[in-house]
Image (cartoon, one colour):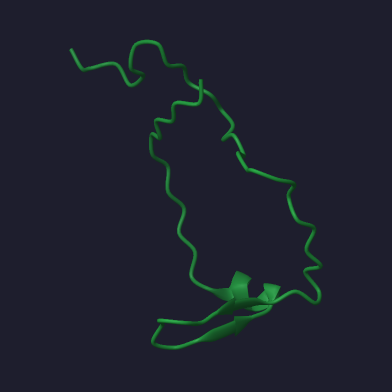
Length: 68
């Protein structure tokens, strides 16, 4: 018999809660840029299109979060 996936007192949910301290900023994807700089080997300045062209990985895994 295998151990249950959900510990006692927790529950499964389909969505992932978005938790933040303040409002979600509105970003114009046509003009916005992601700047990666500082202690990095190669600084980057990415458009939204550049960002979407980066390698992507899909991953499905259990995530245990206590929010109550």
